[in-house]
Amino acid sequence: MVSCDVETPIKNNFVVEAFLFQGEKVDDIKIKETRLWNSEDTEDVYIEDASVILYGNGDEFDLEYSVSDESYTYKDNIDIVSGKTYGIEVVVDGRTATAQTIVPTKPLGLRMSANKIIVPPLKISRALPDILANLFENARTDVRWDNPNNENHYLTIKYVGEEEDPIFSDEIPGAVGDFFSNFSLQSEPNQGESYNVICMSLKNYGKYKVSLYKINDEYMNLFDSEVQDGTELNEPPSNIINAFGIFSAFASDTTSFEIVRK
Image (cartoon, rainbow, N blue to C red; front, side, top):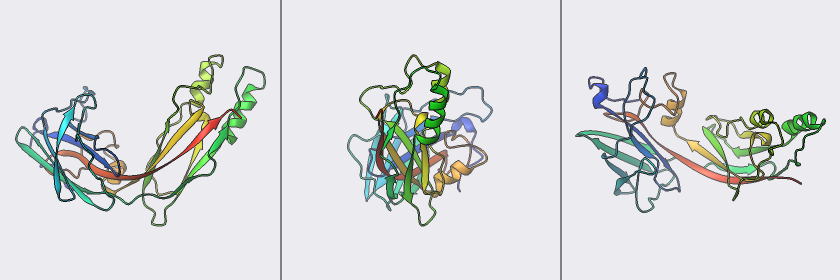
C-alpha cells in the first residue's frame, strides 16, 4: 500500500483517520498531528483548520470541523452507498493528501439465536457462586450471519436502554461485578459467521443493539499489521497518499436482544 513520501520530516506531516459508514452520517473524519512511535506524549492533537473535501456520487462536499466531536462533518446527510467509490482530499499548511475507498456490500442474514436472555435478580447467599457460574455458562446468545465468501466482519454491542438498570446491585461485592463486566463489547475482525455473547459480561438489564460491520481490505491490512493496531495511525500501513493514516469504509446491519429478569 502507498504511504507518504519518506523524505518529509514527520513534524511536517499529519495523520488522516477517516471512516465512512454505509447509511450513516459522515462524522468520523479526524485530522491529527503526527508523533514519533516512541514519543512520551500520548495525547492526540487534532488539527482544526484543515481543508477537507469528500468526493462521491459525482459531487464534492466541503466538511467543517466540529469542536464537540473533534471531527470533520457535513451539515446535511451524504449518501454513503455500498459498492460506490469515495475520495477524500485533505490540505494542511499547503500539503495535500488524498485517498480513495470502496464501500463494502451490506452483511447478509444477520440474526440472533435468542432475543431474550433471562438473568434472575442476584442476591447475596451461599448459593450465589454456583448461580453465577451457571449463568456465566448458560446466559448466552449467538449473533449469526451468512458469510459465503469468507469476508471480514466485526461487531459491536451497545446498551440502548433509557436508563441504567444494573444486573449487579450495590449489595453484590464489587470484585464479582467487575469480573463479570470486563469483557470486550467489540469483537476483533474475523471471517467467521457467529459471535457468542456472554450476557454476564454486560452491565444492565434491558435492550442491546448489535451492529455487524463488513470491512474492506485497507482496514483489514491496518488491523493485521505487526506495526500497529486500528487505534494508532502514526505509522504505516496507510492508503493515504502524501500523509499518514487510513481512509476506509464499512457497511452494516443491526439487530437486538434483551436481558430480562424473568
